[in-house]
Image (cartoon, rainbow, N blue to C red; front, side, top):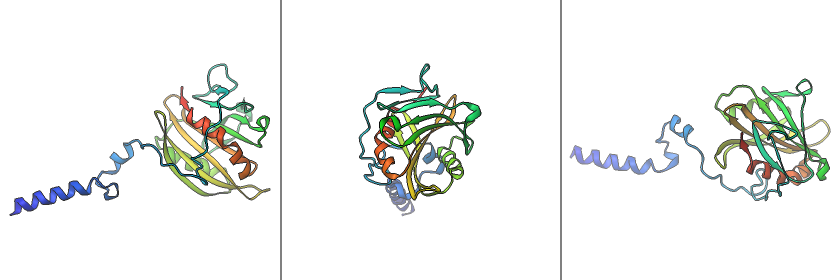
Length: 211
């Protein structure tokens, strides 16, 4: 009788462990598992339904205005410029390396690339430290995403400036083998500008590659 009960118990445990919420895998196993395709979330705050803009140039490659540990594509009119080390800004241990101006393309805002030294292997912790220094940030949401072979962490949030109301912004981090964590951020004058620029962000993240 005990043998029968043990077999029944083992069968029930096997069934329960097929349900993600049952938590049968240990924390180390879950942390090491790469996420599958991210669910599509339409509208604010993720805007997953927005199609990427058409590519016109590549940033990050040798000889481009910004030579970086990563590369990505940009649409026509977006103008990248390297940030001199002596003039740079540092937030949460990440230094501003490249600033891509959207004004020549008709929008008011920037796509920025930041690089941090070393790596914790925890993209969310990197983003949390960065946003803690960003200032006046609220309604932060995080998610893990796949972009080709890359396992990335992305954040959507609102920032309130001294001159405007809540402004939707976005940040993404990749851990590069040679360059450490690299962050990509998008922010505009207001949420309307952010939405106008978002196809460029979609293009950048979908073409994002580690050198």
